[in-house]
Length: 198
Image 1 (spheres, rainbow, N blue to C red):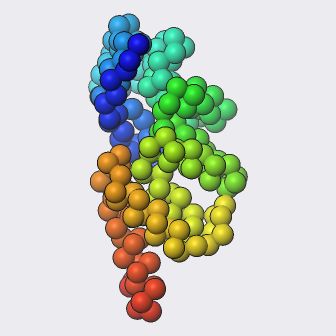
Image 2 (tube, rainbow, N blue to C red):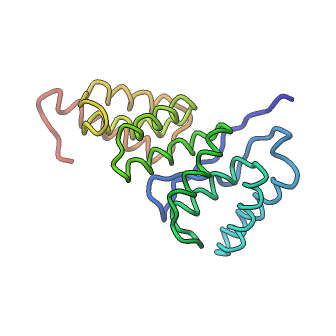
């Protein structure tokens, strides 16, 4: 069975900053078709129309059946407390399930959970995992870590390398591209001895 991969539409979450979820476009291999595809579409429609309870139930059904996109989104519901009480343990569980099926955004969301818990060693590991899986936006977070010394020694050259790699990646959001360009300008300004105001 050969899968035809299309780029997933990843959007930044508004109610849960710096977390990502899957909306709209999904992989086209045959394992992702049929009932879970319909559940995903129906859940996304319910979510878009503000029916969070229905969206949660539909994402839950498909996630339990093994749909990776729905596992990621279900983790997001638990992570942000959408329609349910916020539950970091269940969020991490569903993100792990999605990660095991190749969802790079799940690795980024796990990194964010560790960042919020101030567990910077694990945070770095998960952002690197997301990068290895092709998540260009995770390069922004890793670059920020190299600038601030969170979880890694301060290294502005490595930070700049992360931003340059992000700009070369086709798998980034416009907001991450703009932030990387800004960080590169700031780093170059510092290196030249003429810092610019933030």
